[in-house]
Image (tube, rainbow, N blue to C red):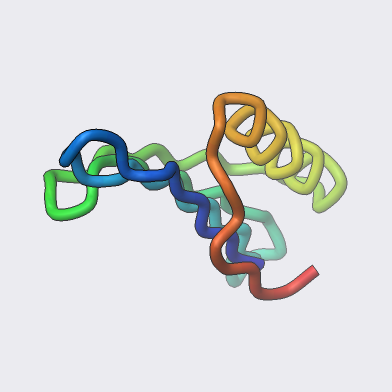
Length: 80
């Protein structure tokens, strides 16, 4: 599952983005990947590992909702 969010560009500054990806690993666990930054700039990121799908999905949805409250808009969604 992958989600790409982006802010509207303001006053000549490039838009900011936030990307979330939820992937199952080979051992049955789940990895939530977060990447953020400014278009054309150096990205930041974080990786979180979960043993259960429900916990990983809850963290994915919580991160998505937090970014939407901050003004990001969904530009691309793949998966659920």
